[in-house]
Image (tube, protein in one colour):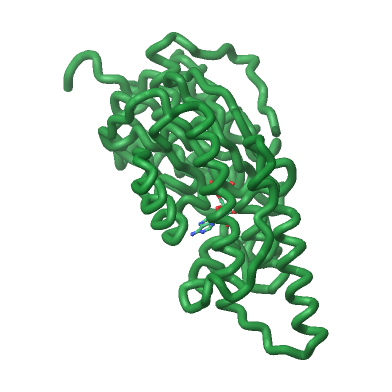
Length: 335
Ligand code: KG4
Ligand code: ZN
């Protein structure tokens, strides 16, 4: 071991995944353990906050132990503890933050609060990837749809965000409405594979708005109206066509808004992240369009698109080397 190696213990409990990871020198994922609560929340059609907090409480200790043992790094070698303290579900965040405070206090090591959206961006820096700065990042998850200008690591500004539903939320709500299950994204993606994406022309709200904000609730309503109309006409609902057409509308909106922002800020690199960017059709469409427009594009591997602690450890590393650590009175924030 080189003397100056930095090992960050990352902790993520902002929603329904309890995750702990050990990251070496900000780039190397030594372990990334994710305990998903998906099966538990499935029967309710979405995340139940009270249940999520209690599950985190049950899982956090064993997840942390597993992360340390599979990384083969004893606690005493950990340089700092990085934990997501927002945005997310209050009760869930409190479990991770309290646990992180206890570990940091016991080890007498720095505590670093990490922003969940920022962590999704820097998931792209893991596995030795080099990305030229500045870049624009599009983070698309169940809670967020944001365009972010990244001038430098840690120097970011949000240049656009959703005014209502997040893109992932639209996938989840439509899947729930159609009784397809939770989470909606992967289910709709699978159904869309055998559908025609041009079958139904759904609206693409705010694509010509002249700003970088998003809106997905009108698209969601249009899908619901389409279903109601088909039922009224006694037509058989073509689920694959519906899913493919809805998914294409989401992709078109995200693409159009991203291209506008890249153009406006004269940036030629885009960095994607968040659960929705695990979607294969989205990845293909973005890759093709960005290539055509001579824009460099980066995605994290699929397992680092959805919530995980590796991205938290990576973000924590950059804060650590800049001396941006926190005091023990830091709190959680929800939005
Ligand atoms: O980033 P993430 O794991 O958690 C949040 O921070 O919200 O994202 C979860 C969201 C859910 O809304 C889920 O339906 C969506 O990402 N998602 C997908 C896919 N996989 C997950 N959406 C579309 N296609 C997918 N393959
Ligand atoms: Zn997330």
